[in-house]
Length: 238
Image 1 (tube, rainbow, N blue to C red):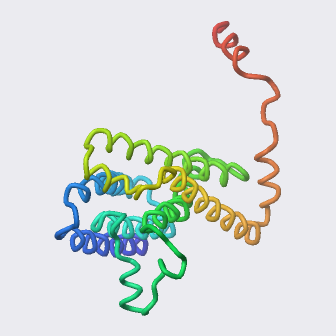
Image 2 (cartoon, one colour):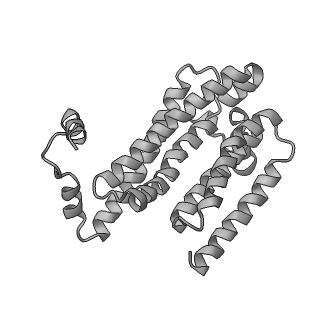
């Protein structure tokens, strides 16, 4: 990582630490806050451990910073109680909930959408730089992993709710009486990732001269021989 990138990452880290520390003061529910921050700690630890051996682009670090920053707001208030509508009324004399006839707090919906929109690109960067994917697969696989990781998070929420139960489980789940909450969350994350990948593909199509050639090559069959049992026989015959 060059000096400019190190400086940029240092600024993001300092800003996030300040925000996280402020929002760690007197959260609405300390237990829910700790549970929500478990994944944040894991994510930040992974980024810290890999920033030298596998530094990401400034675009990826910025996207991750924005997502984690918004998540810390949800963790402070608990997602179902983030007073975004009250803020809009105080600052702009405008009620989003009233204008759009919202019957629930939709901050959690926003964060799930932003998870797909902001995290799909860092995932794409890892696929390209580690797995060497190109063309179609450089857009489909980040979308696929974003969708599957969103599903895994919903399973994590369910497991945590089963383990802890009570009000803590309800605060962590944040379903607010919607039996289709998990499905809608996964759908919004998928939509965000789809938008991110379509935008990235459109930009690359404009800037990358061999875009069509790379795309077509990525869909070409590389090995005409079937795998499965034929490959097992080949291994056993050695």
